[in-house]
Image 1 (tube, rainbow, N blue to C red):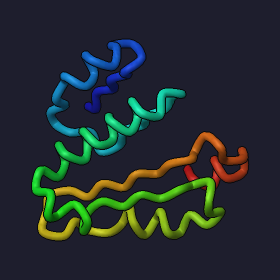
Image 2 (image 1 turned 120 degrees about the vertical axis):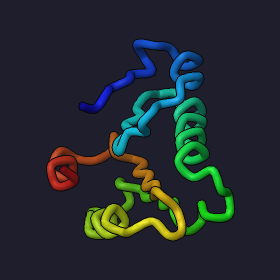
Image 3 (image 1 turned 180 degrees about the vertical axis):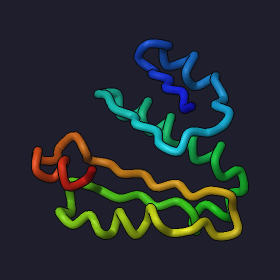
Image 4 (image 1 turned 90 degrees about the horizontal axis):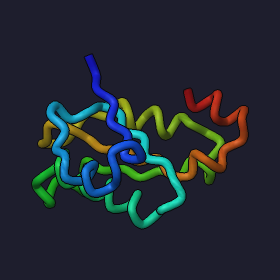
Length: 106
């Protein structure tokens, strides 16, 4: 059973102090505080990939608003981790998507 933790309900500091175990496969971060959201993403990347030398090979960041083709996202999600337990795929700009694109993203 997966657990859902919402930063808005727990507060930013409590959310950041918590170490999820096991780490969730999907994390959704939304809100107007982009600096805090970036910090949460950074923290998840550090937790998922503690070895900094493996991060360039296992972290992908995509801008959903810049592309209407989600095949790149599907490829990145299907890719296996390289010399690590996990990969991290960050998708930014989902809020700006049109409704049709949001449906295609599902």
